Amino acid sequence: MSIPTAIDRGVSSELAADLAATAFTLARRFAAGATMWSVAPSWEPHALHIAVEFVHPVIMGKRALPAVALTGADLVDLVRVSVRPGDIVVAVAGADQPDVRSIMRRCPAWGATTLWIGSGERPKAGAADHVLWLDDPDPRAPATGGFVLFYHVLWELTHVCFEHPGLLKPECAEEVCVTCSDEGRLGEVVAVSADGLAAVRTGRGVEDVVTTLVGPVAAGDLVLVHAGTAISRLEEDT
Image 1 (tube, rainbow, N blue to C red):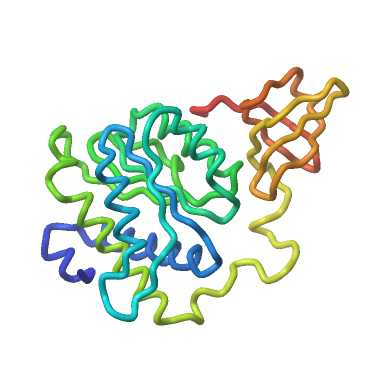
Image 2 (tube, rainbow, N blue to C red):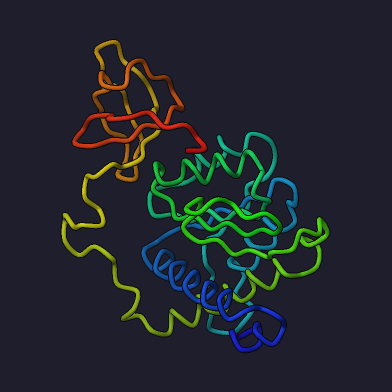
């Protein structure tokens, strides 16, 4: 289904532009070897549908893209142990879903690109890399087909992007760039030692980080890392 068709079905031009930008990001991540992980705590069929949509090439000549649905309890831990730097995490949930809020908050430390699909009250700005939202307070909105339209269009547009491989080159050709500099990277504490150091997971992997500036830390804490030092502690919803 093309963007014009989506607009014909009531998708605004702004949302259509968001769909196109999101698909471009997905294509770049998949081209670099990403796996997509989908979660939908309250609406698990959406998580399963997304995985099937991307992994099953229903059109001749289209690529099967690696996509896995994560379901069940302890979703934060499931995503934590599954995702690798460069992967994609897609969530279908309301803005107040606690597991999804925690996952979205932690994904930068895990090196994952995030997409949040939902309806009703929006998540706060910056809660995910891409947000595709239906501004419909009706609790029946998840069953109306709007979410399905989103990920069907994303699947199609991602494959359109694959037809232009020159657009899918890695973002950072050099070892150091402004975007990836060591300026306040989010990290999640993995383990703590007694000498003021902690093993901290960031988008670059697990690093030894000095924690004396922020005081005692525990596994699961979120910290801001600069030059090998934790310079502040972050709450999940800050």
